[in-house]
Image (tube, rainbow, N blue to C red; front, side):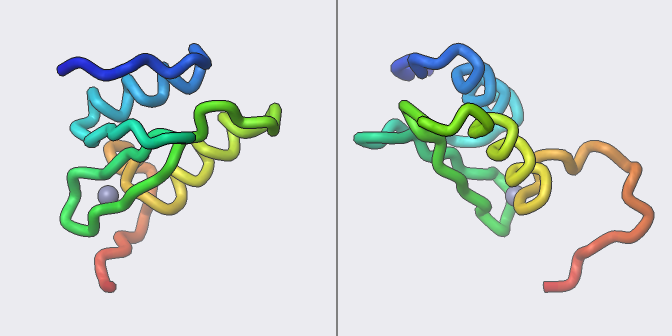
Amino acid sequence: MTRPRHPDKDLERILKEAEDRGWRVERGKRYYKIYCPCPEMHKKSVHLTPSDPGYRRNLLGQLGRATCWCRESDEKPEGETRG
Ligand SMILES: [Zn+2]
């Protein structure tokens, strides 16, 4: 699978990790879009040139909260399966 690299190496690592997790990564004009493989089809955009120095951390936080990015961990006592 060939994909243009993200110019920011930290964000590139997130894209790569997303691919490793089975997410689909698409290159847009100003940002990448990543799509979760789960039935809920979570998606997130990753800016090409974020101006916020805390962008990567925020992005990871959002991924952890709003998608199943962190689902492999079983530290959560309750399962949120109702929708
Ligand atoms: Zn998901």
